[in-house]
Image 1: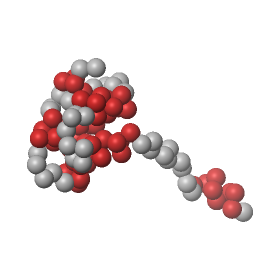
Image 2 (image 1 turned 120 degrees about the horizontal axis):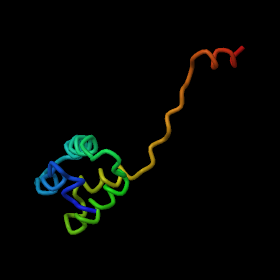
Image 3 (image 1 turned 180 degrees about the vertical axis):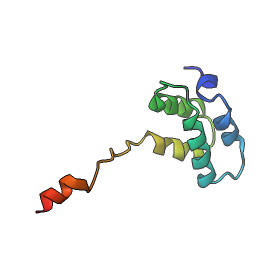
Length: 90
């Protein structure tokens, strides 16, 4: 996988270079990065590649924590309420 393909704007590269960056700033950068992934790109594979690529960076860097959080499974949203919920309540 090509790092320049998954980090076209260099957001992750720059984030790992910023001294004193906060978790909140890293989350904002991560969101911008995720929105700019190429269509059809597997986000999980891209995150794993980023973690491997920046493995030699500071272990406590907040972006590493944000990337690991990005690997966590997001619960599937289910619809709540609506007509069917009202009918079941009767």
